Image (cartoon, rainbow, N blue to C red; front, top):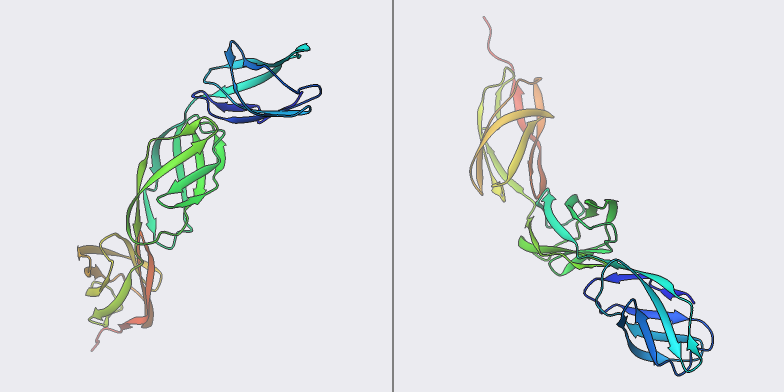
Length: 247
């Protein structure tokens, strides 16, 4: 007498199908000491709504001919989500987020606002999930759904990708130390600025402006890359290193 599925939420409400023989006109299906609601019944199958419960219980079917052998049903407690890392990323999605919490081993869906993704279960306390694309920038609720239920929401922020409009000045000494003003959009969450692949120190002034101090480099033009929580933007050959004077 197989049961499918053989686990469900402690709050009840899981739809269960029990298959076997001589099941017609069942009068009761017991989950431990509690009775399930029968929604469909044929000689070979019964569909029921599991009652609330906890732990592992015996499930049996009673008909006019007697009571069947019993099989085990496992009640799963509700999950708890504690944190997301990172808790922001590009509106385009595609980045990987770690969800930490408890009771996550049966997770089947992680929802990001109206979007959802199937997680990889690392352990009962951790999930890894690739973030789906967002409809727009801004904060959305993140919930995890398991066999035991759905977590309370955590917040995740979608961030639009940056753009670069101009650099001033566009050239400076190969020795470095030139202060360059970078203008663009969505720069507020900048995490790195590089000149020719070398990291520069920088300060964000607002969402459209930052100031970077060039590192030393080799004479010639280099790409300038600004990386934010929303992605990266590149100014191809955006800055030119020049030789210093000599006499």
